Length: 439
Image (cartoon, rainbow, N blue to C red; front, side):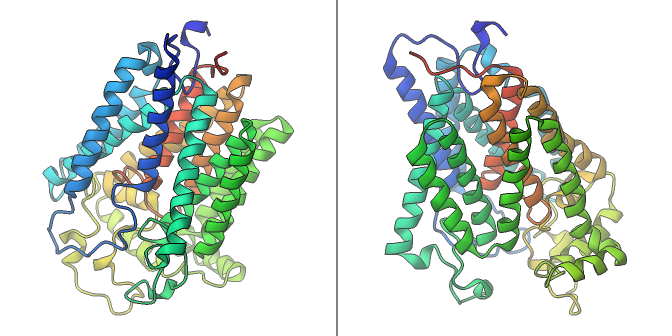
């Protein structure tokens, strides 16, 4: 690749003023910090909405729109056009095209399209975080500093206002009393976010930011341990181990093969266990809670509804907490009242419910299959390997998390944002060469 287009996380414009490069790095770090923190941190569990009531949030709408404008202007002014052209617009056009078509048939097309627009605006910020820093070192510094500030803020809140970051004993979430949820509404959202923070710490350590990287890994893992999220505690070392195996052996293809085997195994023992009595029997012999905290009832319900509309689905953001569910009679035999559930606790089932089975297959292939191919391509470019390892580690980890939580195209949800960052980043590392630090 010619020198004029080098840089997988950076723009390759030769800026005359060092201050411009510093500004770009700071802006990228601030953007990542805001997306991980969200615009309404420490708010606690959201209040339930009445059937048909809008779930739009004016703070998010105005805040992310303004942030998107800032990052769009910065990218157009500071980043070379050939770098922007390599952000993978064609793939994202497929993803958002499927979502837009599904939104048109949703219960509230206007509300669905508004939510999808917010998701697209957030993607502008995601792109800016990747392409604004001058070089790989600039990206590493921006990402590590963003994670460090987030960790220091959350740990400070643990000391001065623990009731805002730890689950209490009141309400429906009282069963999680004492578990750390950080700045997010639930431990099951916070634990994966801080797991990815720990992965960024590993990447920072590999880039020479040893002290900061070590602190981030230690504090990130400590948070996950105190979150009480058993699945995250299992998936975090699994994802790290898969990528580390490929790097140590020098065979990234082996890591991808191991990952695909694990995907099949986890799928069989989660949703597969509600479809097959034999798999359910194996699961009962392996773990103490084969229901995954009642998720099996939600999955059974979701599978029934998918069978009713397998081709078209119900539309973007147009199933859970809409009349399609809230208008049903309560099933007193089930462990969960699905009428109050906010998601299917499975990204793949929710994709089928939203986009239909064909749309879900395409969506999952683009977002979780093609990045694996990108990783194999990126590993052939020596300067890109650290970045490629980071991004594929996040993709692998979130692929597992998707078996138990829903996050695909979920507006400004930090889980979706970090996953989208990794998908876009791994695509860049496959198409471009990371530029070393400028002298």
